Length: 296
Image (tube, rainbow, N blue to C red; front, side, top):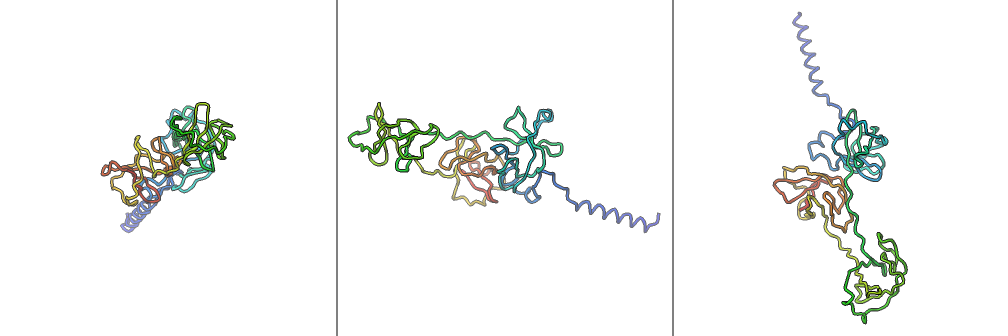
């Protein structure tokens, strides 16, 4: 063969291999993470889908032998940025637009998205217990809750009549109007004493009600049945180099409440990743807006 022709063939082969090396493999339909993102913590908010009235978060894929039991509920209609949470029906923060969404009767807390030949699983976290509702009455726009003070400790001679219970609301709600209660006693006389408590006269004595505690606890999260409070003295951007992801925030409760369930907070951050470090075993780090928030 002509040496010159051999040279050109070798040169063409080298150019072809170089072009292949520079060509990027296109991402999967549901993968909107860039190479730069994957070098950092996985992402600020874990992949999530909104369906019904709840958020479903990334979980294990469907077992192959269960595919025949799936029921279609629609397709992913739209997606939002991966650092936010979806809020509309069949919306995600991880792509998959146009992909079919399925439910499984034997796993009511799961959704599955079909991307190619893979059924990606999304889990709905178990809800946080509802806030307990105390017996309460409202007066002068202020909510008073039952303090269970013993009747014999109340000096009736110092009580001053201020009105009577006008109406009662449902037991699982708090009254919003003055002289309304959620514990009955309609028509019973209401008294005031030292100014910080009010009293409802009953056949058995007096029920004492104190001003509801509006004190706000610090930002708190529960992990492995332990409460962690935000460390305001820690620099948000500082975190150990050996961080390991241990989960994500499943949900949030009222700001004045204490989380009773693992992976819940009273300060938002739903869907944000949680990290631990062997160098600081008593501290948790939540990744939010490019920073690590320390809880210990």
